[in-house]
Image 1: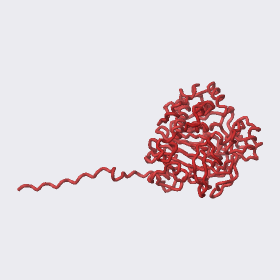
Image 2: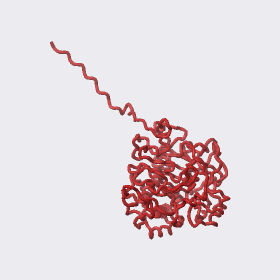
Image 3: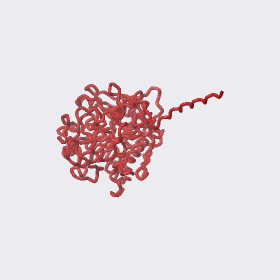
Image 4: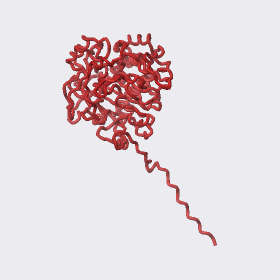
Length: 499
């Protein structure tokens, strides 16, 4: 699927941007939590009142009741992620759900015979070279197989899940291209045309080449695609999308390494090791030219060409000019008016509160000894999540975005909830803000209740597609001979009559 060119229009950005903004300082988590307590919180009320027959714009949506969104030590020591989000459906509920699933999947694998170090590596591995029928093939699992299934971005993307969201390649500050894997639960292969099976989820992982071993990254050994070069790869991004009965649109949550990229507004402190996707000079320019609101970086830093991809090639080379990346919106929150009940302050508070408790300076993961296998995850953080109200079709984008070459306003009646500008810097790097054709996960993974399977971009390769190639088709299952019901026994011949 090809995408329109990513042209920008600064004047259009200004005209489409919302007003009444609030300044956030996302990396001062302790301060943010204190502010969030004063303003809002989550955990005891629903996100909004019961919807009217016709949705109305909520200029200022009421924040949830003031309370801390609580994390639990048991998520780390005894992971047991829930099958469904609580019926109250607060922002806190969704982010607790997502953190639990993340921590369960990155926990140590119990069976080393699978070749997996972590639970997510015991799932089935998507093979980007097999276009259909993967569920009928033997499962690929483990790190060794993942190293063989690495995918790079090309300029004619067929499956968005295998790499960047828009056909552009990202090069880190060492000039190495990012690599990707996609995993899916075994339960996904039990789905039917009516919808996904219980236990369905997908995981996408982004890796960068580590010049030398780095204990702050979860890593694996691999051979670069098309070469014999042995490298160590460090995880920089982790998407997880969970299907539930009440949320067939999937609950999308994303996590990143803390040193991926700074905020565009200049408020991010330089990490000791530097940023993976931003040069020191570019980051210093942001710091020296702070912005009052989030969004585009200062025009004084234009020479660094922030969030601009290199010219596409086919195939993309494994090395290239490093990109300079900055994050426009902390935790995917575009400050300003709330949209149809999606309260930005409550969303922001839930994410920051859980991050603080789990990976903040005194977080549950942070204080673990380095010998604990879960301690590595103190170097990662949740970036945000997105879902729809009541599992509705995702509809139109709720925030300003590009369409047919110009910026259009967001739909004030959009049912989308959570981080409406959600972007992982390792996967949707070049799709941020008003200049984006894909303002969040639903920009690519549009969900329609009439075609529930199409929210997954790997569904057609796991099963098959219709003649258009766009709609996932799951043929009716034929039971194996051993499982098929036995044919009725032939009636015994009648005994001859006695004469």
